[in-house]
Length: 190
Image 1 (cartoon, rainbow, N blue to C red):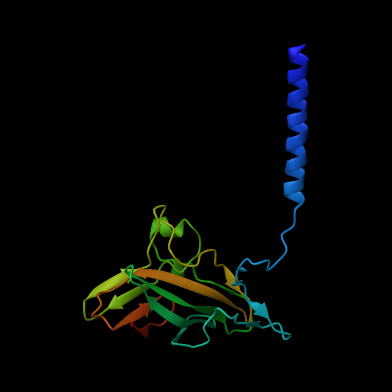
Image 2: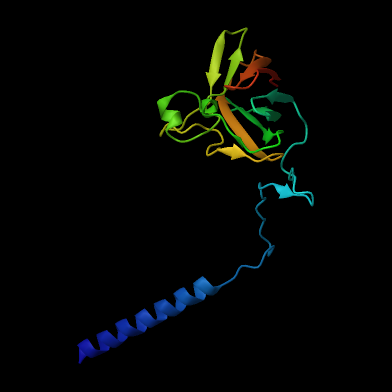
């Protein structure tokens, strides 16, 4: 008789668990109920089909670096943080009239970086005064700390990109930004 009550108890527990799971899965969260909302970083499209920057993207152009086949990299910010990193943010855009495949050379030639796909892993900052070159940082798996998965851009299209480097000494006020297949540009550090 105790076995029968135990089975009923387990069956009741199972039914209650399924009911709670169903209620939890079906619950909908209403937006802005006292919770902060996440900001989107996806580009917004204007009526003409062109991407326009979102509120998070800076509009200032610190440098425009020209590449091959109508590609340009617009540098919007260079942020040096207290943790010893420099983050370069901008937009890679296609000013040409046809779809442009992004050059594999932008990834650099390090095997660990290249195996993770097309990226901006070949970028570097050159401190000519300190005579040092700073490469894009990598994580413990060899992935570059930069935008990855880049393959092509349509005509007139752009995409947000970033690259993170080790910071030069505090006495360094400017560096040369270099990305394979693009011309170099001077960036000011603050």
